[in-house]
Image (tube, rainbow, N blue to C red; front, side, top):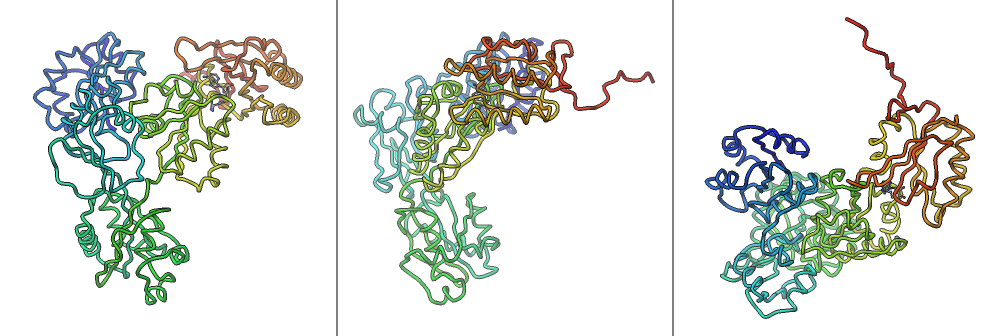
Length: 565
Ligand code: SAH
């Protein structure tokens, strides 16, 4: 997403510089007119009156226009001005959290806590959204017809809203071509999988034509195709690769023996001889579409290719294990924010869900789980992903550092290995190091002092290695209400191997505005009672020193004054 901030005053420029977007300063009108067709979002630091006048002549299709957010010169408000459902609400929320401002979001569904029909993850939306939404806001929810896809999960917020009131408009959940009708919204998931086989060198145009015929005959929508599948042998077949690219979907291939194990209505001995499986198109479509899939178009063939279409019983789920960074949104990667926004279900320990609260919308199902229930949390996330839901499991910092990613990877095979993405985050040690200066400038280690899962002897052996290796060390989980003796033991141990004046520091609540606290001390004098659950302890190596208030471990470059020219 390309976002540009435009400021006109000096105060506005100072605000704009705190935002992670391209920044232009000066004449608002000229710049907005020039950028309008190019960008996805504009953040205008000016009065709403000026912003409205400038964008008014440019407003066109709400699906094409950029999202526009207006911020006052004082940085108190981030107002979603136009394109609310197409990014402005999210952009305003993001800008607000980055500036410590209040997001002003006025789209009716958000204020009524109803899901926006044209924003539901996993569905393309067409039809009379305005009329159906208006009726719903006035207390008449739509009727839902999902008879084509009876097992397809619908967003929880949509289902619960539907159970409360009388019929307003209509929502049809389908992968068929439905004629547009007043008062009707069509939600279309990517439920179709196209299986393709072809002879070498088959033309892409010919395969596309064969597919178009198959779709038309069954009344199915091309937009509902979410995957093209074939046999491994055809992974690089230009015509098939081009078909997937034209449809804008993934091409997934399977070994011939996997396809050979799939029951199909139209097997062929000739194909079995040539490729090692009696079916390519039908078998690939069914295998890729997963358990319970239905063959909606059996094999159709031309002289060069075969296609078949399967319908999934339910969506292919996905689990993103997301690192939210140490605290404020400013230290959260855009990829992490996007993963949470795209999810239907957000799962996490209470405190971590709170770190993502600015990203949550009415369509999200939020599952807050207690601390200590880590395995249950991972099983729950994997189970839901295996059932076809798009899930974000949120962690603080980085999800792979003393967090959930490793357990998820270990447990995934027990849930049929649903598609999995790990989204990295700024880990507490890196955020703390940045606050302190550059203590991790040379080799360093991270050790968790929690002996709940690791026996203390093992921890002590690693401390020994750190001491012998003269490495800087960051202690995660240094102390809790019940684990109080571990930190003094660890410090005592290190103090025996380091000079007493070796720099050490405690950084608490790093990255959390108004809460962050830094204590600069030495390994001999560090007071364990200054350390809490949300503290990170950093102990230097023999080369770490204070330069003013900065804790620095030199890399070894010559740090001499510049010689005079
Ligand atoms: N995945 C996290 C670590 C979770 S373990 C990460 O990558 O940062 C929990 C420990 O991390 C806490 O006991 C504390 O030592 C450290 N920690 C997490 N957030 C912190 C913060 N904002 N400030 C200081 N330490 C933090």
